[in-house]
Image (cartoon, rainbow, N blue to C red; front, top):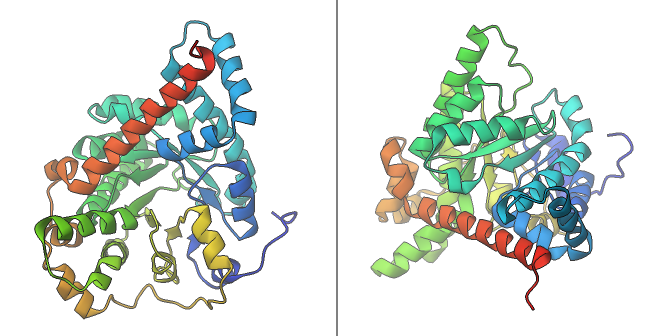
Amino acid sequence: MSDIEYTEGPLLDANRAFDTVLWNDSSDPEELRQSISFGGVGATCNPVIAYTTISKHPDIWVDRIKKIAADNPTWGESEIGWQAVKGMSVEAAKMLEPAFEKHNGRNGRLSVQTDPRLYRDPKALADQAEEFHNLAKNIVVKIPATKTGIEAIEDATERGVSINVTVSFSVPQAVAAAEAIERGLERRKAAGHDISQMGPVVTIMAGRLDDWLKGVVARDKIFIDASALEWAGIAAAKRAYEIFNERGFTARVLVAAFRNCYQWSEMQGGDMVVSPPFKWQQIINGSDYKPVTKIDEPVAEHYLDELRRISDFNRAYEVDGMSEEEFISFGPTVKTLRQFLDACNDLDVLVRNIILPAV
């Protein structure tokens, strides 16, 4: 990546100083190009991000969607929309190939998310993960951290797919997913396959856990120090990171769904991934913050004491706080899955309005 003109600032300072790496929480080409200049070495995507990127750039995507439809006259709206997403992903993955080669597959990856409408079918999730894996050499595939998803994660990993666990907000989800990845890797290795270039990550959607707990506090009328509610996702991510190190998991923790700058700064110093939306990267890099190691600093006990008054925080923070069967009904899981499903519907409508405009 010697031809990249880097942008000096806290993001680049952190990337130079620590093992903590920056991925962009979008596959939008312009945002990704700028993130790479900040030192970014990966990117993530989901149905909401994909829909937003396509709808934000009609000058690019209207003609491309029309061509996809013309080339495939029997395809429905969903097939056309997903083909557009796959095309976007391949182009973004190409931008990250230099980092992929430099990091031997551990970074330089573009995340593609499996269709959330498959969330009840582990084989369909694993099959689609394998399909997406074959789009480019540096794809990492998102599968949700539900009981069904855990089964698919293990299966897809055994097939050689690098996984980015998504729809994951808690320590028990992260640990269960990392264990599934480990089982898949062991079976693949035992079958004589090379796993040295596989780069699995397990996401903690820190801000979405915060969002949910804020809603719970309001719903249940819990009198609490409101500032503690900015630390729940950070606490879960730090606890997951600690356990991953203790147990020697291959997968790294990835922190996403930012709601404040602490969700970046508190992770610095860890061998992990931080994936802020581009707007947060701009805020961070436009500041005069000097990055320091924070990953091993525990969240203040006062905040933890306040958060422990919320039962759903305990479910998210304790390694045995939930069973795999409970993952699908955990509040943030339900809200996020439904949002992803809604985004698929939105993409269908967008495609419909292009190929069959109203009269």
